[in-house]
Amino acid sequence: MDAKTVRDVDVGGKRVFVRADLNVPLDDNRITDDNRIRASLPTIVYLLEHGASVVLASHLGRPKGKVNDALRLRPVAERLGQLLGRPVRMTGDALGPGVQVAVDKLQPGDLLLLENLRFHAAEEANDPEFAEALAGLADLYVNDAFGAAHRAHASTEGITHHLPAVAGLLMEREVDALTRLLVRPARPFHAVIGGAKVSGKLEVLEALLSRCQAVLVGGGMANTFLAAKGIELGKSLVEEDQLGAAEHIMSEARRKRVRLMLPTDAVVAPQIHHRARVRTVTIGEVPKDMMVVDIGPETLTAFTEHLAKAQTIFWNGPMGVFEMPQMADGTNAMARFIAGRTAKGVVTVVGGGDSVAAVEQLGLADRMTHVSTGGGASLEFLEGKTLPGVAALLPADAEIELDGGSR
Ligand code: ADP
Ligand code: MG
Image (tube, rainbow, N blue to C red):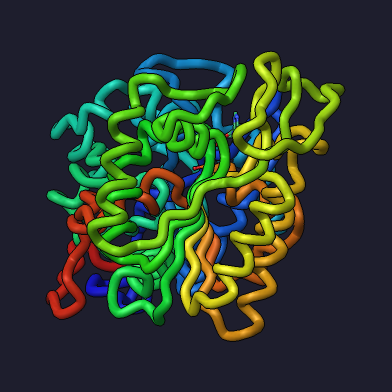
């Protein structure tokens, strides 16, 4: 990437503020998926091994500027400690006199985790004073939080006005992998898009039409496209207010000669429930009292046959309600198919919270070229948007001067 990274700086004896994305899903204080913590390890370990003292910070959930005991980073500190094989100390707040005392005591090789940044409204408001105070804790700033890079917050953007700012190893890996989709991707480049809704993904759909040779649409999102073509879908999730948007995408696809594939059959159920009975129907024959919950086998075959021609595949959004086993076949088969293409030399990239979770659950993450830790950030990156957290980093050819000296 065109930014300085931790490897370009002599970090020995320096105090380093690392913004990581440790925003993991929690079920009553239990971490249900620790991938973001694992993905943050290389940068933390690199810095500690090179003699830096690390002040680690992250957000967790949406506390909206107030202290929320259910969103404390304690479980993250514990999991991080297990992974590092040493206890991880943490502060009771992201900022304040107690934090300064704890930071002052840090020795080379020490690690301190700050409490949830978003307990302070100033974080998301990108408050300049808050940013400056965070910067005051360190000599160098490292952004490894790709998943938060599409937000200009105090810890992702404001802080870079006060400290030399470089990329962490995860940030570098994410940007490099996603850049491969933007800059001369091997063709054909096909995208598979699913998930619940069209709204929220319109911009990425438009962007993909300019970059891809085919866009395959599944999941609940496909319903809105089918409904726009006048197809009855019973009780299925259809965004009535997005029918025009779906029509626009379809006409853009025709104009740009991009193949836009929609399901021709579907798995339907009376409701989304773990005991709901499912069956397969042709897309025009969804019963009035049933809803589409997955793509059908005929669709899967058509999708994968077309995808087999691709040299680059990007996948975002599950093909169905994969949380229910009887509605997960389409998503699971898609994950297996795409993973199988990697071994054939195809560049395979998965981005998006739920699609990534599906891939992880199947143990297929290692068999993809890249699995992004950033949901919204990866989509905005593919839209060609500048991510504020990335733009704020020092360019690769910048000179770095660290004040503070050795500690
Ligand atoms: P991602 O996080 O990968 O970007 P989204 O958040 O857009 O994906 O969508 C994921 C959600 O979409 C899942 O919770 C899944 O149950 C839901 N979903 C997929 N297909 C359907 C469908 N046919 N009807 C209702 N919900 C669906
Ligand atoms: Mg999601």
